[in-house]
Amino acid sequence: MNAADAELNEAYKDLLDAIGDKENWRNIEFLQAKFRAQVISSERAWVKYKIEECGLQYMRDTNGLMAPIDGLACSLKMTQDRTAELKKITDEINSVGDS
Image 1 (tube, helix red, strand yellow):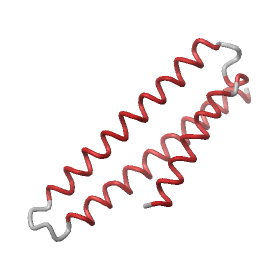
Image 2 (cartoon, rainbow, N blue to C red):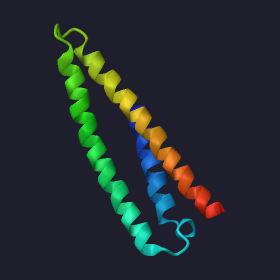
Image 3 (cartoon, rainbow, N blue to C red):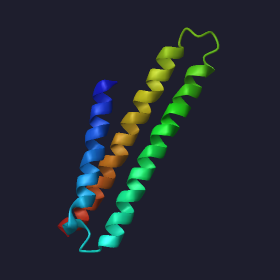
């Protein structure tokens, strides 16, 4: 799980760096600032959602034997999916700067 978290954190940092690159925004600073704030807000909401959703998965295991595995599997899958999503957004932002 630590590797997946590290990759997510790196993808998040790369996205914020891409947002900070003025070339990607063609000097539309107000849009750049709003987008950065929205990404930060979205990430905070996603973290809360992941905690709640994976907690639910953990609680759904009625006999308790698989609960830790279910909770970790949920967290890993959601983290990997979010990492892919952040990387996609970063690529989209960087491609705007390249055009």
